[in-house]
Amino acid sequence: MLTIILSALALAAQGPTTPTVPPSATQLPPPAPPVPAPVTSPVVGVVEADTRPYVALATDLGTITVRLEDKRAPVTAANFLRYVDTKRMDGFKFYRSTRSWGPASQLIQAGNRGDARKNFPVIAHEPTNVTGLTNCKGALVMARLAPGDAMTDFFLLLSDIPGFDADPAQSGDNAGFAVFGELVGGADVAEKIFAAPVSPTAGEGVMQGQMLEPMVTIKTARRIPAPADAPKGCVVKAP
Image (cartoon, rainbow, N blue to C red; front, side, top):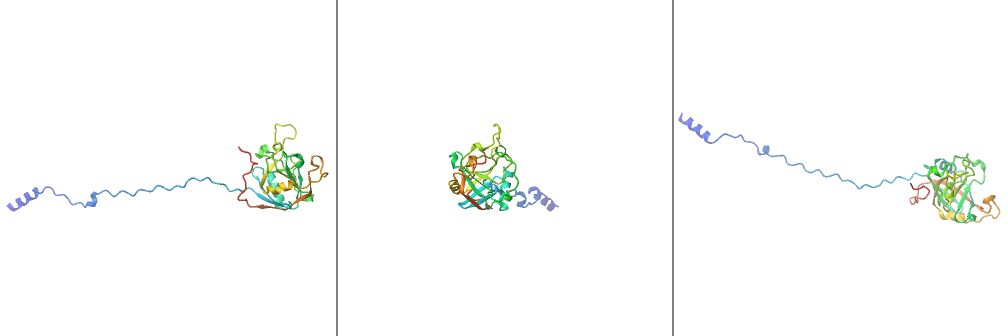
């Protein structure tokens, strides 16, 4: 009996028994490694591909390259491309130079000077106050007598001719001439055509003394890819 009492007293002196807990159960989990910030590339402006048609006009004096504004002047540009794609423009002539008008109104004119059966029907006029294009140096412009009678003939301007722009505020025929593209290559060739010999007597009215003799033939007219160095140009008016 005395032994039992002494054992009880010894246990009481040791204090309450605490269950053994593994050290890992009392520790917080290690912190998660930091998530690296996403790497962002610098914002670079997106350059849209130039989908406008380009055409090379191979002439007796060299090659001229033009770009068509087919979104702004769709009717006129499509008419030009129709002659190109059917190869009806092959054999058209540059036949006029306006040297006699002085430095302020310089242009060369081309069109079908042969078989009239190559001509497609006339097209609707697209005035510059609607298209947002302008008759600046290098402009590719449809020739006409009255609005809506244009067919094959076109100008390449070798000087700014703002008087060719439509001006609804003016009286009479104020519809101007329809710009539908511009010269982007072969400016030196265009200048050679402008400086080519003219007949002193051929031509009627204001065109007398402006008819090239001999005329300069467009041997082929073909679509080409957009040149890598094509200039921005001037025909699209600044907003």
